[in-house]
Amino acid sequence: LHAKPRSLKAGTMFELLMDPTNPSKKAQIEFGGFGVAPNKDIVLNFMHEGQNMQVSMPDPDAAISASSGSGTRKAEPGNPHHLGTVVPGELLSYSVNIGDVLKAGKPLCVLESMKMEMKISVPDEMDGLQVKALPCKGRTKEKQGDILAPGDLLLEMQES
Image (cartoon, rainbow, N blue to C red; front, side, top):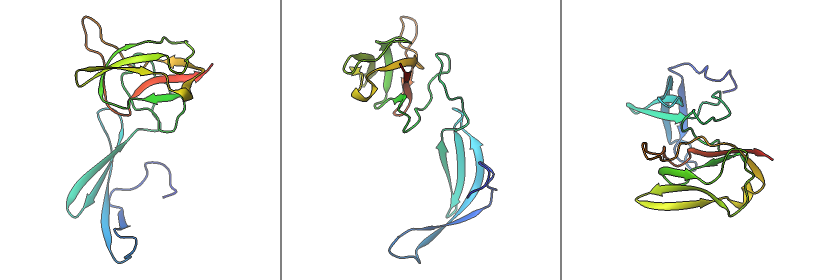
């Protein structure tokens, strides 16, 4: 497990404890290899009891900074400079611009979810940070806004 990243060989067998109170209950898992999802996430393939399973995760080697042309990507969990979307929906508009200093409680953006508009305010923990990137596209007269899933990067910030 302390090898070079993504060097685990296909066919490697794992044994998982199924019940921590009963060490004799174990499951055999076979690693099937690495892949890449259409959104560039890393896909790990496993086999358990004849069933193929896939687990995907963000590629840690992907570009660190979002830009306005990069489309939706996942917010990095635990990164204080990333704000992820909490609810699924369409981004209608941002109320901030790149370079703005955020103020807690002020309008941040508007999302539409289940035919309802939701006005999202700046969270307290982001007070005083500067907007670095607006990675999503809002709705225009001609085009629909980006459709966001929970965890998609909504806003990237930096120290002001």
